[in-house]
Image (cartoon, rainbow over all chains, first blue to last red; front, top):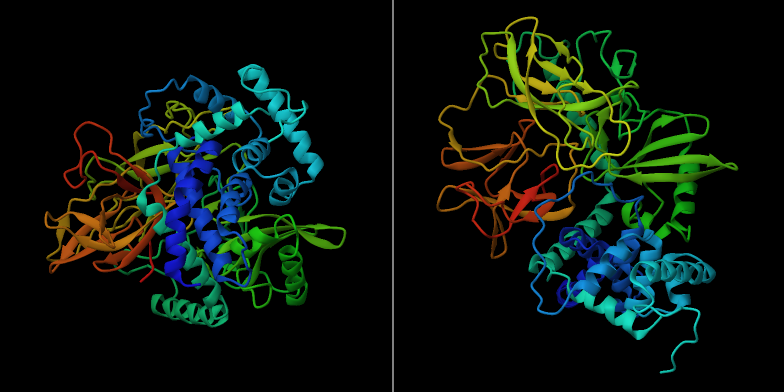
Length: 168
Length: 429
């Protein structure tokens, strides 16, 4: 696999990675940092010995793991006050703003579990493998996170996770 | 969970700003650098031997006594201090100020190049590195961040040790600190094994005594009168202080001075409780020397090696100053990690820019960076006096931002993003 292939791949997945980073940080610069770090990491693996069966799916989970990896990242004491304004939207944003605030109040691992399961559409087993926690922990964290979101957002937004799942 | 929640998550994700087109390119570039580092690590031993040779040559040309009797010059900051004052608020071992990557424990700078000998064996450390790499929890991160070339032939040295703790420097280190992405790895002993306690980059600073936190010293807006011993400087607290007025909290500065340089160690009283970090105010203060400043440079001792605040009184004949946009950012401040790179050049208006492919980036450089042209060639000079020359391919960390409204710098394009440099600047080509 040559560099040009990876550059093409990077350009194609960067917006998707940015959206994942945005869900976790709601900060443009922080999410761009996650995108860069994620692409660098995928590149090393891509060009290395390990074979990646589904590079896009693999890449999608990397920002989530990086977001969790406080050990590797220096905690910044800076708060950027010159954030760009959000892009304009005609639609009512109250729901997504409420969700953003509610998710920001969750534990980082809970955020990661929610993003992997309900944005990346991973199964419990897949999320557990990517986060290196047990499947039971994924279920417990999902239940706890959803309960907290229900408290903040109201049951109208989120049904009880213990209720039977909808059949496709 | 309802489909409504999934939809809500997707709508929230769709509100993400479009990534800068350079983000993907810079991610690839960073990956290539990581890969290259993997390839070159095998030659690390030879590189270290070369560095040691250069260091020894430098020491010989300096001669015993360092700068005494010599014209002070920009370049390496003072590492051999005159007799240290008793009221210096730092931890001292022998005649050395202990340094570390934050926290309350550190090591003598003299051990950083070769390490403390005889603490652990190479076989024991190789086995430890292999064990870290094979750990399901952090093996992948360790492969990327610590051991890209595997556990064999890792360049390591012991910086600090107790019975149950080890601090290793990985990669190339000199007595000035880590070089080019070198890392620090903390290990703790658990059931006869060494378990990683944390790892990362290391921004060295002297280890303070309890009851102190660092204040950083910067050059004053007021012109320096070198014939006097009262020198104006600006001071700001280093930790998050919620923008409190630093004046009531600043302690008296402690100066270490000799005929060659002045180093200022300034601390303040630590905050208690939580604090936000909107940016700490700079206040004008003065330092009082034992003798007029004359040609000597002034260094800030809150980082290691000490950072140049006021350069020595000499300049390059024929040099033309270039108006360089700078910020108040200095080492030790909070920093973003976006990769900024480009070839150092001047544009048609005489402004410094970084050229990266077809994109020109205008940067806001850290505090005390300056630029000049010598015989028409652009030279960028950092706070320590190190120089970058036109055509160098530079790399740094930082963030992209649109300059705030109001009177801007003539070399910063209005309304478009510029790069805020918030790290050391390295030459990659």
